[in-house]
Amino acid sequence: MVVAEIEAAQTHDLRRRVLRDGRSENLAFPEDDRPGAFHLGVRQTPAGPLLAVASFSPEETPYRPGRSAVRLRGMATEGACQGRGIGRRLVEEATRRLRTDGFEVLWANGRDGALGFYRRLGFEIVGDGFLAGPDGDIPHHVVLLDL
Ligand SMILES: CC(C)(COP(=O)(O)OP(=O)(O)OC[C@H]1O[C@@H](n2cnc3c(N)ncnc32)[C@H](O)[C@@H]1OP(=O)(O)O)[C@@H](O)C(=O)NCCC(=O)NCCS
Image (cartoon, rainbow, N blue to C red; front, side):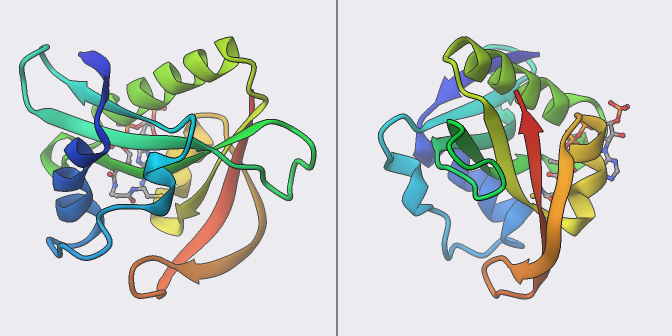
């Protein structure tokens, strides 16, 4: 597996299919082009198709006031490839890079259906549940990893 930095637009196909049920609305996030934002993709081989994507942008969280924090958005692994360690590989590469850059916290609004994934990677689940997502109806919790 190869983890590489990709352009924001290269995340859209997996965002649409995995996170938007095939719909093309809200594929671009306002955070995508923030200073310091970056996007990672995982491929089986350097020229192969993207199997997982996620996006990272500096943003503080009230759960760790004053700490330099990065928000993870758009975590998506190709449906047929889920459960093979690809998402883990991507997040571990991101945390390695963020630690090197001196960031202290990685956090996300995690869908409740994915909380087990974040827990396995060492994230804590903090605060009360809330509804979010493109139609505002998907249960979420904040998940947070002290780097
Ligand atoms: C959640 C998601 C990104 C995980 O990616 P993945 O590539 O399937 O995850 P991995 O195979 O790397 O899993 C890593 C670990 O988490 C566990 N895990 C993965 N998804 C899980 C889930 N939904 N519930 C419980 N555990 C889960 C795996 O068993 C594995 O455990 P291990 O390393 O101890 O064996 C992927 O399933 C996905 O795209 N889901 C649909 C979209 C989604 O919900 N995205 C997250 C939005 S916040």
